[in-house]
Each structure stands twice: as structure tokens, then as C-alpha cells.
Image (cartoon, one colour):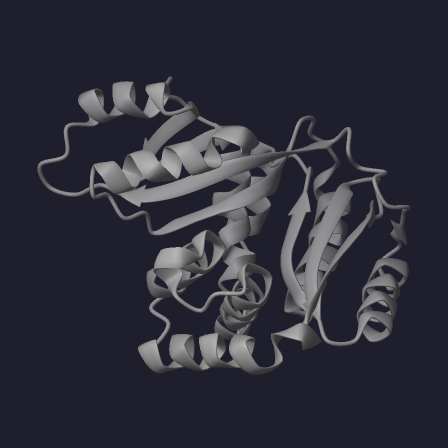
Length: 250
């Protein structure tokens, strides 16, 4: 059960890009606002999506007043935001899936298309990457003093964990989409609060490129992540040892 997940490695290396996001609180605020809009309830105890959004915001040390402001915005004008999903390929045919929250669909689609085109990529039709990405529940749990990892691992497997990895004081658990809620309830039962819990698009197949081509693809991904309407960017670029070394040297 324990071991090394290629997706976890990609996400850790990609963390260097994620850390550059200056508008992380803006993204978290949007998710909270949409959670209120979609659920129709501003009480996290009664709105599962909002509860997760607030938990993730706290995990990123988002101030309480920011969270409350985002909830209030969802009560008043959350209808301004719409979810947009865009799929395509970078130069080198790396599959790239972009999740957005926007108050102007035409602007967002035009901006994302411009980034793809400028970097030698191209947007595809809706669903063109369905065979490349699976939606999985990803839970990041801090290891706390007194935790019995062996006992927890058995409980986690029973609750739907497909993969479990422990590294740098963090437990990363992957579940099937349909087991996301079940596993979250198991954590609540054990009074374990994850640092982050969300549904992510995990690649089923990796794309290996030479280091120079990989860097071109990563530049496009980084530019997409810097767009204010983008919430998440998923890709299937393989993190080879050569690429890891090249990124570490930058």
C-alpha cells in the first residue's frame, strides 16, 4: 500500500511552480464563493463543498476575515462566477487540463487559448482528454505525534484508500472519485483534519520529453497558472531524473 506515487512526485516538483502564485488567496476565495452559490447554504456544517473549501483555505493560512468575506460574497453575488473546463495539448503533445472560475467566459477562453497558441500548443474539444485523466480524491494529512500509521493504514484502506505515501512528515492518500466522501467521513471519525482535501485529475499515462521540450511545456503550464481565472492546471508530463536535475539547478 505504501510506496511512491508518480503523481505525488509530479505534484511535489510542480510545487515550485505553485509557490509562485501570488494570488493563491484569490483562488481560495473563489472556491469558497462558488461553494456557497452551488450549495445554497453559507454554513460549512451544512454544505460539504464549502466545508472542504474553508478547510483548504485554513490549510493555506488564509486569514479568517478573508474567508468570511468570500462566504458573504457567495451569499450576495456568487452567481457572477462560472466554472469553465478547457482541455488541450502543449508543444510536445503534453496533455493539459485547465479548471477556471470566471465572471467573463469569453475573456477567459480567449486568454487561455492565447497562452496555448503562443507556447506552441492548441486547445481541443470538450472531453478530448477523458482517456488520459482520472478524477481522484487526494488527501494531504500532517503526521502528528502519537499517530499509529500502521493502524491508520488499515482503516484508510477500508475507507477506500488506493495509495498511501509518507514523506517529509506528510501522508498523501489517493482514493477513487466515488470514495472521496467516504474517506473524508473516516477522517472526521478519527478527528483527523487534513491540510488539504480535493478532487484532482490524475494522469493515467505519462508523456516523456527531452529536457528542453519539457521546459517549454512547463513554461506554458506556469503561464496558465498565473492567469487570475485559473484554479488548477493538470498535465501528464513525466518528471524524469534529468528534468528534475535541470529544474533543481535553475
